Length: 447
Ligand code: ARG
Image (cartoon, rainbow, N blue to C red; front, side, top):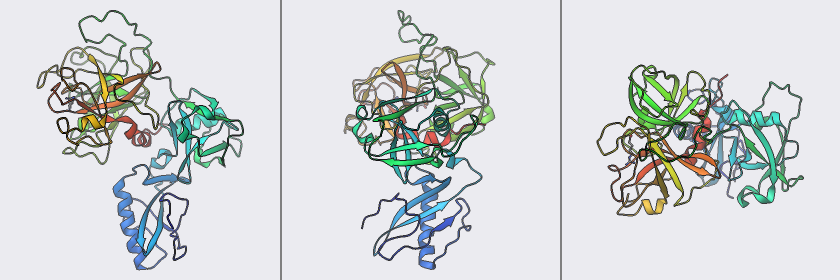
C-alpha cells in the first residue's frame, strides 16, 4: 500500500492498523505526549526533529484546521504514515502557511484541502472570501475576483476542483481562514468557471513614459518604481523590491550578519543615491530564510518589513510576485537594476542603472564551462554567456523583473555570480517562484 505523505490520515496507519494520533507542541522538545509505547515514541522523536529541521518548508509542514501538521513516511515492515499535529498558539505561522495560493498564467485561486491543491470554482464565491484569501496571502488589500472558463486554464489546474461557501454569516469586517470555510470537492465546476484573485495593483509604471533613454542605461524616475536601496549605517549595501506597502523582498546574504535592524534604512522612489541624512524608512522586522547559510548559495531570500506602510504614487510602486507554477522561459527579456558597481570591485554607482538581460535555462547555466552544476532549483540565471552586461556587487537583493502581458513580475532577486559580466559567468538570481511559499508564510498581515 502506498500512502500519500500528506494524506488526511491524522494517525499512524498501515498494515498494522490504525494507531493513535500524536500531538506535540513545536519548539518545546519535551512537551509532546505520546499515547503509544517506546518504539513509537522514538519514531515520533525522529519525526519531530525532522519537522523542526524543515522549518515549515512547504509540503513538509502545512496548516490544517489552524494546526501545523507535518508528515513523513516511516518504514516499518510496510510503510505507514505518521502524522504529527502541532499547534503554535504564539505564532502566526499557521495563519498563512500555505493553504491558499494563486496559480498559473491566469491567477486562479487554489486552496489546499487534505494536502491536495484544488482550484476554486466560481459558484458561491463572494468578495468577503476574496478579502480573506488576500489576507492569508499576506496582503492588506483586495482588488477583485473574476471568473474564467475552466477549460481556459492550464490542464494541471483543472483536475482537482472545489467550491467554497460561507457557512455562517459574517459581518463585512470579519475575515475567515479559507480552509475553515465549508468546501465541496468537485469533479466539475457547476458554473464551468473558476475563480481568479487579484489582491494588489502591482507591476505598473504609471509615471514612466518611454522617451529617448538619456545617458545610456541610467534609469529614469518611475522606470523601476519597485526598486529600493537598502542602507546599513547610512551606506548603500543592497537593493530590494517593493512587493506590498509593508514588505520588501531582498537577498538573505544582504542581511546576514547585519541583524541590528535599527541600523537599516530603506530608500524608496529614488534614482540617485541620497545624500547623507535623506529621508528614508525604518525597518520593523527582518526575516531571512532559515536554511540560508553564508557559505552556501541556496535560499538566498529575505523579507524586510517597513515600520509604516508606503504610499504608492507612481515613483513608488509594488512589483507583482509571480504566480505558483509560472515559468519564465529561456530567452525572456528581463531587466536588472541597481546602484551596484559598474565594474568588478568598483564603487557603488550614484545613479540607478539598469540593463536588459535574457533568462538562461538552468541546463545552459549548469554546463561545465558555465557554472558546472552549481545552479539549483532555487536559482535562475540571466545574462549573456559572452559577458559584457551583468549585475555586480551592490546590486544584490535587487530585482530581476520581467514584463508579462503588460504587468511587471519579480522573477529573481540578485544573488551571486563569479566576477561581473565575465564570459560564461552570467548573473545568478534567487528564483522567486521557488521562494513563493516561503514569502507567503512570512508576509503575514499586520493588524
Ligand atoms: N553578491 C553581489 C552583491 O552582494 C551580487 C553579485 C551579482 N554578481 C553577478 N555577477 N551578477 O551585491
